Every structure is written in structure tokens, then in C-alpha cells.
Length: 378
Image (cartoon, rainbow, N blue to C red; front, side, top):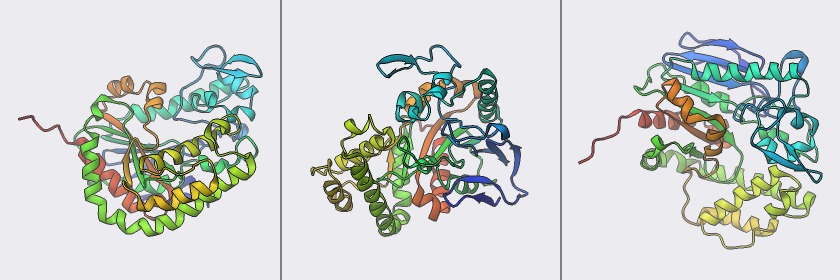
């Protein structure tokens, strides 16, 4: 297996050694591409934050999981800015930084910001190269971790926890998925991410693709197959995730004076989204207490482990990927590339960091099930 280098925060930095069964075939300042027997792996190296870059070295701030923006003019999105409506495009994104990081009209839709046409063209070339290596491949399985790169941006009021934007430890999981003995018949794309949000250890997003209609049955197979392994991790996961989440919640309450996602949306979209995610998990598991204070959320977080359901492998529980699929026109691009389907995998950072082999085994089992032809009806 290829050995990779990672930062202390879990960002992918590059390979430390090669392997005869797989090799790095592309080394770009912003991403690497590895190939094995019938498999291709793309690992992002650049930051996904638009003002976290080094233009002189060609290391850009690109979110590969967003749409390629126009330099100027309409993108299909607008934002109300100081009482005026402005177009959400690469140029306005750059002009409005760093404040633009508070507005999901920018962060959730556009891949990058650019102040000059030359900068825009350079970033376009990297973005298009990434997707060329992703779609223009004969590999049966393509795995891409677009957000695994290092984030160096210091915290500020616009983004108090910038390193939370790293899909940490996904490099070690992706490398473990390159197993030459495992080449399915159907061609598949796996979009690999990690998250520190409270809830499941592994969440599958269906991208809203009709060919993923059978995923609920696949999920049941995954849960049965890995119930014992997941159950053995729960005490350690609880000891990690409850204090970690509470510390962030208490920081939000102290810093912003509110835990109401609607009020937070105008202060920090990152904080608002995290609180929405926590509230969603607690609502599904049946918690009816107060979620507007840190004390109330503490009771909910600690009680989660005693309230059904305790599904730790979920479907569309955190990110379904459906908006991203629309931004990327994913359905059309899959057909053009001859790929059967794509799914998004959100792996808990706890699982990816401490149990990458288990995370890879779950993903490989998922690939195996997705690659099976549909069973004939009665």
C-alpha cells in the first residue's frame, strides 16, 4: 500500500512511498491522481477556501465540489450585499472576501474567486483538469476526495474554525480502497469526504440519482454486515464526539450570543449549518428538549445514545449531495463518461483517523453491492 504524508490536522500532503500495485500518475500543486488495477483515486491538495492560496506557486483556493463560475456576469445566483443585489460570480466573490465566506450564496455554489482574468483562466485550467482526470478515465472505480487538502487560513470572525473545512484523514481511507483484487463489473464513482458533525459514523448521499433507488436496501446490508464492528467503537466515539461538539456549541453561544440557526445565518453560515445538523439528528432520534441553549443541547447530545434510532450508518443524513449534483450536471456527465452511478460518502473524522481500514472495508462493500446487477422481478 502507498504510504502518504498528512498534516497534524489530517490534510493530505502527498505520497511518502510508492507501491508496485498502484502509482501516482499526476502530481499537480492542487491535486494528485493515483492508479491501481482498474481503479483511480484523486486526492485534493489545495484548500477549498477561496482566500487560502499561494498564487505565485500555483496553489489555489478551489472547491472542486462546486460549479465552475463565470468570471463576471450572471451565474444563476445572486446575493443581497449592503442593500443591493449583486451577481454571484468569481470576480464579485474575490472583491467581497473575506466577508463573502459568511454567505452561502457564494460558498455553497462557486468553486473559486478571481480578481483578474488571468487568475480566472489559471484556476479554470486546474478545475477542468481535475474533472478531466475524474471523468475521462477507463477505470472501473473512480474515488475522489476533493476536499482533502490542507487549510492554512487563520481563524477570524468570518470563519472561526477554518480547519473544519479539511476533509481530514480521507487520504488514508482512499489509499486503502486501492485494492487490485477488487474490480467490479459496473463502473462507479465515489465522492469521499469526512465530517466532524455529530451523528453517524458514515453517511451515504444518493446525489438524487434515479439509479440509486436501491440504496435503502444496500444500507440495510451495510448495517447488518458491520453492526458488530461499529458497535465496538461506540464507547470511544461517544467519548470523542460529545465533548468535541459541546465545546464548539459553547463557543458559538459565548461568541455569538445565540444558538438559533436563523439568527446565526447572518453571523456565520458555518455555525448556522452545524447547529442545523445537530438539531436534525436530535429531532430524528426523538429529543424534545430545548436546543436553543448549550445546556439544552448538552442534554440532547448525552441522551442521543439512549434514544432510538441509533443508526450510525445512514442515508442522506448529513449531505445528500443533491445540490452538488445539480451544480455539476452530474447525471449528464456520468452518462457521457460511461459511469453507472455515483454516491457521496461522508465519513466521520473519528472513523477515518482511527479506523481507516474499517472505513475502507465499508466503502468497498458498498462498491461491491452497487456494482451488482439488479435482481430480476418475480
